Amino acid sequence: MTVKAGPMNDAERSWPFDLSRYNRRKSLSKKEQRGLAAATCAGKLCIVPNRHLLDRLIAPLEDALVYIAGDNAIHFQGVISVMLREMQARQLSLWGWSREIWREVLGTDHQKFAAKTGYRNIRCVLLALAYLFDCLDDVHTYGLVWHRKLARHVFGHDHVESLIARVQAEIARIGYAAAINEKRIPNLLCKLLLANHSPRLEDLTSDLLEELQNGWGNLSNKEDVLALSRALHNFGIIDRPLRQRRSRRPADQATTGVPVVWAEWITRWRNTSPCEPLTRRGHFYCLCKVGRWIAASHPELADPALWRNEHAVEFIAALKHAKIGEWSVRNQALGKRLGKPLSPATQAHHLSAVSAFFQDCQEWSWIPTRFSPQRAFQVPRTIKSKVGTNPRVIADDIWAKLLWAGLNFTDDDVPKSPCRGRPTYTTSRYPVEMIRAMALTWLFCGLRANEIARLRVGCIRWQREDVTVEGSTARLGQDAICWLDVPVTKTSRAFTKPVDVMVGKAIEEWERVRPDQRPALDPKTGEIVHYLFFYREQQVSNGYLNRTLIPMLCRKAGVPLSDTRGMITSHRARSTIASQLYNSREPMSLFDLQEWLRILMIVNADSDEAALTRVW
Image (cartoon, helix red, strand yellow):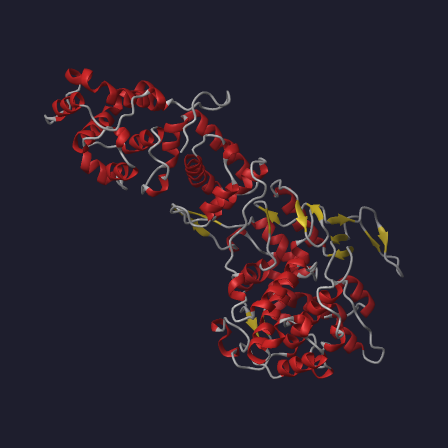
């Protein structure tokens, strides 16, 4: 630790001591030894008669106590007593104490310290002394510490509380519950200030936050670190907020069993490819499997420049006979699927990944053009004919119950978890208005999960004038038609579609209570946008529908999470809505349905059913 001397800014507390003005000799003089022996020989400390002998040892303690407690310093005379007794027992001045000695004196528990010394409520003051005397740089290793109280002692009560209030206001603005702000965030902020040895928010760094996120100290709720990082990012102190840590396969584990040369090539391709991150990651894992096939069958093909047409043919033949788990390193989660043949869709995906890899390597002039990857790795008709859509429409009775659950969703239907330290207080991650808006969007709009997550603020528009229904004399009043603006999708540009007015009302209700959030990058378009379903400075994940929202609706509706066709997932709503619109009393035409869903559709003039299958 480097102690800062002199004033910082007018608004901030100056460091209290220029340690160079004290005589910091580690050993005790004979005069000081006699003074300590005389002062501590009786059961009660006797300082006054021996003060002239102990002035070098007592003066810095008194200065520190005045700084910490001001006029109340007289109440902490037990600190001087404990310090003098420990110096007498060790025959060392406080300047000669190592961090191990300080840790032995302070212990790791308030109650044990009180039982040992006979003094209560002074351990935190002693911690502050060690900190101010440059003998404490790892506060989190001293067991139970109230960091907020310690930071007040070190940096000043008013300054610390002003920083806490500033951070709390920002965290409340972006949507975090009061239970986090009341105790956890202040203690965490003070912990970071102490670890950084600076009372300035502006001196906190991303590296320190990442160190805390990766397991520093005893912090069990990593959401607190994320919340603080988002507040600091909004203040402009750090470049970007921390990301939620998810357990993903490490890169070195993904390439286990892959020839070194092949691993270097596919890693280079992954770092260069312009594909979207999800596509790039999926292709990379497929190429790792190809590398294990190379290691087992053709070690000489580790260099992509050596591949020819005959090698592509041999790989396709091996792929058709491959089993699940055969070229993998993590087979524990495969369960009953282990050893079964690869599905046609999986085989097609592997061929697509290998084809893209070789095409890019040739186009970028990394390897010579010796064959056509597009033709050599073309999916054979024997595989392509088995790859088709599987709409898995939800049964009408189950779908009706899910619609009822979405329309009648209330705060009581949201599972809540107890807040740490406050078992009687419960909270949910998202407000019920946001959950209801997402549920109705899923149930009525026929959108993919990614499209729902990427909707933007202001995506709802209303028909503001009366209109006449084409082909009749009926008129629709204003606000009877609701339009939803959908951003760029998987298969089309941005478009607008009519949706049920209940969707519009639910989204407008959420927009009224939605906390003000910073804009974020849309990776599909490269635009900086305000996402609709964005809370706590974080976009809702694509998996939230399947993992959380749909199970909540199923529980509300009293239906199982799966039926005869499998799990109820987000995409099955799209298939169900398409079927109902096509088979209704006044059905949509295939082309109208195509326009409403905005999908690529190849119409077969001889079979409307075949065309509808492509809609799904």
